[in-house]
Length: 321
Ligand SMILES: Nc1nc2c(ncn2[C@@H]2O[C@H](COP(=O)(O)OP(=O)(O)OP(=O)(O)O)[C@@H](O)[C@H]2O)c(=O)[nH]1
Image (cartoon, rainbow, N blue to C red):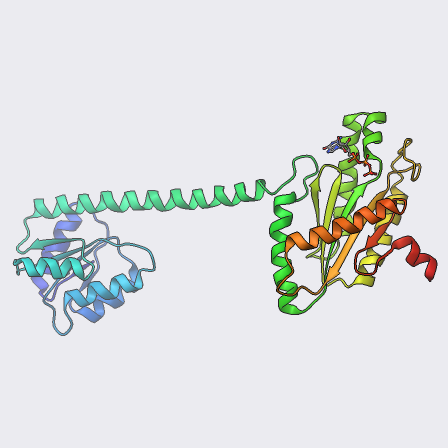
């Protein structure tokens, strides 16, 4: 884009630019139309006269910079003025270079080439940083995935739990955390082999993923043969119902576990904690409560879920009904 109030200068510059291979040259004779044309066409380079009728070229440069939103368009000032203060003011207002009129075509071409090189470099940098951002996102996703089961791992669990605690506190809604552990899994491995153990973990992971039907419910692998479920907007009684349903789905899958003292099939013990978080609630305290409850479920005989807050397990609750 060429901005100059003198028709002859504009035409001469446009001619030189076209001669050097520029395909389209936009022309403006005053500051306001220069800004409007810039916003409309987003040219690759601006040759900008300082003395314009009304607002100056400095003003145009400032408006252009304000409207760029992180982009960058090279601006070269053109002026008959050649004192140091003009150079300083031109660069201050957002210009990248300064040429004194009349401009020799060869000097103009050299400047254009230099600006083009900078522009190309910037575009390459932009596309590289977009690629880097994407790769970073993928990496962040990958470090939160458990390789064996494909579930979110402990690191991801902690991040999700943190944000669900905040959401539940804000919305004053109950949040449930369940820690589940496969019963007698050591003997499963010892009896059927480590590969069968891995397959069993994958099968349980699939089941846990399937029972998490609400969009914000999430099943994660906490580590080893332990899984954690985060269930937002789930009160104590709902959590117990959920746990019973989970045990019954697992029972129906009937994954043989010949060495289990709890059942002929694979079973889970679980610790449940449910609360409306306050300012003292954090990931650690919830995990600790769920872990205490899990310990109680194991101690009560396994194949059951124990609620930390209700101090009752799913089997006792069923008996009371
Ligand atoms: N196959 C397989 N086994 C695992 C994996 N991670 C942990 N384990 C095994 O899980 C078993 C856990 O054993 P324990 O902590 O003694 O628990 P348990 O035998 O389930 O006993 P209870 O929890 O008291 O019912 C160990 O034998 C681990 O080697 C895994 O990724 N794959």
